[in-house]
Image (cartoon, rainbow, N blue to C red; front, side, top):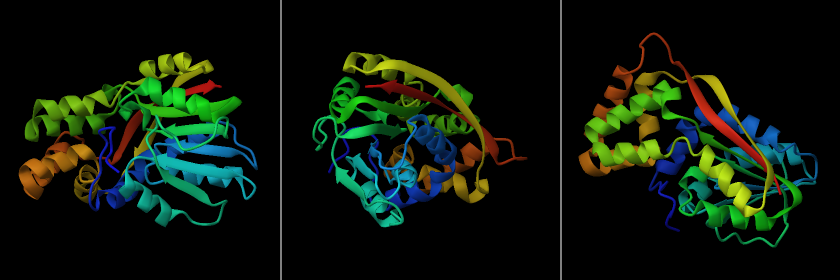
Length: 265
């Protein structure tokens, strides 16, 4: 299924996403799942589940009596999610579906979580209206979106590389993925959620050695794929060199900030 969100990964990129993006996501996934206060037997939807980072964490909390579903429009991401499901928890039902047309009955889920996906929904209001429909009254919603680009030196370096090698349009598309918390909170209110809260989470994340990691991470996100499409692997390698040049060479530990938005149905 084509990805209507703009976060489209093709070919072997979903596998690289699972490998290279995991270090960035791990602490935020933990905070996301904790925010919905899961319990044994809970029913949970991981919306825009990608390769299943949050779904797996939720399944560990819901336990054998729980039910976890994951929905995403990108079939390649779902194939990795299915392959990586450890089968130690309740079976996770992964389904290809857009956020604004979910294949679940009304009031199905005790909680809905969304890890770094809401900023890419083409129609945020429609997606959250549909999310409200499948969430039971009193159910919890939580999502993370990246905070201001300027709060994350690693992402600033990526943007500078995109500006240099893929032009202003690609760099602007990259910047647009940040600071979506205001839009998300307002859309939740319009969709019928209440008690909306938001707070910034900052973690110092120790990345793998940058000589290999930067190019691998770029190749696992749409903006890096755009570089390859326009200039080949050489363009990706030059962009990775530029990213590293804009980062201090004395450390691989960098702050990353996301906004956690929560609400009640």
